[in-house]
Image 1 (cartoon, one colour):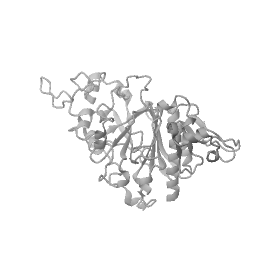
Image 2 (cartoon, helix red, strand yellow):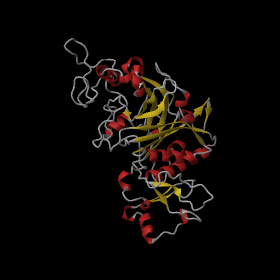
Image 3 (cartoon, helix red, strand yellow):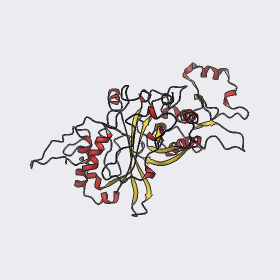
Image 4 (cartoon, helix red, strand yellow):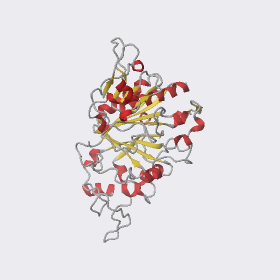
Length: 428
């Protein structure tokens, strides 16, 4: 990422603009200008501040939907759930405006704000992403049910706007939830092909929110990198099985409209174009799994480990036949396998976008503290994730090897146009 040009006296808004730059900012030559309504000062983005080669790994921030939902999954994740500490509605709106400007800067490959020449003031940007590429950074914002009302109190005048679908998930059988990994007023999901870039994004957004928000919980996540898997096959979880084979096609707009994006008539209009995000922190007992024979592992998932194919088939994307039986009349794919239960009748689909995590050692057991930060997006949780999880929680063979420690739901806001701000439809 690259610094914006410093101006010791008045910042970028009074920077002398050459004719060449004036032409650029007017759109000549395909180069535009973004002037946000930011209160953090000088959020002027000139695209010629990008470093060479950066245009190849930039995901556009502006659009009808937020990036980071149907975007090709990046290598790393930094996820933060925040609590809002201010009671002032105007402060909260200004915060979303500030975040919008900063997020647009960082996803475009720029640092936050202009470079400072004052040695007696902290730099506006924390600096650890300087000279790093944008790394396909996406920043996705969501709001939780407690942003609207908490302890019966209408917060920020938003209670009447809370969607009926946006609520705490029910307690499922075998849940072992810990408050320290549950809920949140606002979430920030930063995904990038470089973990330092993702962390830098959340760190600076949290910094901008200081005095208005605090971190409630946070989690890093990883997948196999694109360098390690140039063919971009379906990622594998820490049990060694492919995860995401049954996803709807993110390149098919009709499938996304059917399963992921909130449509008019689904609830309040302010969320049209957004999506519901479910987050579950799932601890995986990988030492126990490692002692399990391959046949049992495959019966647990309902798929062959190496190919990812349904049991009895050869290829990952071969048609799933849950009624197929062997010569003894037994189902080839166990009915309590993870795939069979999660698939159900095949009508309800969710867009899975999970990341593995490894947080050192569990001090209680001396084993790995590792698992999956399960993230999925959908149009209607009560018809998609919740019935799927109800089936899994009751009968999934995988429950012997996992436990759910964290849970949260957020409404991911619709996308934003240049000149607007994230959350504009909610606060309008």
